[in-house]
Length: 151
Image (tube, rainbow, N blue to C red; front, side, top):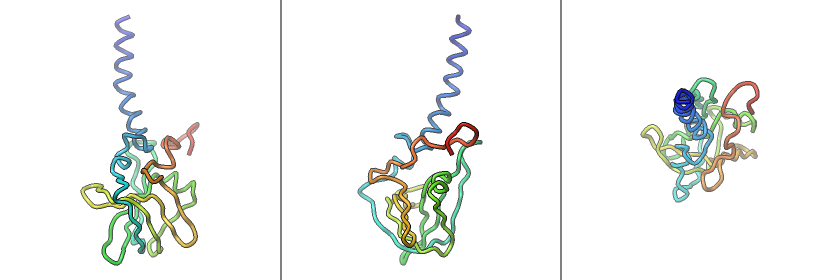
């Protein structure tokens, strides 16, 4: 009986942190980006996409994140969009030279000011990423790659 309890305890100690990480990556309440989005700092910026970056997932088998650098009249700053699978599902593609309008909240990522996008307009297309409170529109969906998982 003691061995069974030890096995379950060790299993829980290993699995719970992984589940929490996946949930945070998916935009759950513990998600780093969700905590950074402040409704008081929501603003809209227009400019040109300078570069697009796809950041690999934090663990093997997890989807990556997409950001781009936006050049405005005043500055160039990173814009955090969201997970690559969600942008792919929405058919959202961005490239250097694209003229966009981004509604988002100013935060800090990697020690730099970053605009956390709520929505991005390019021409007559609008990509909605989060609601006004910062909750992502993809919670819990498709964070893990592979069979049986939503992509």
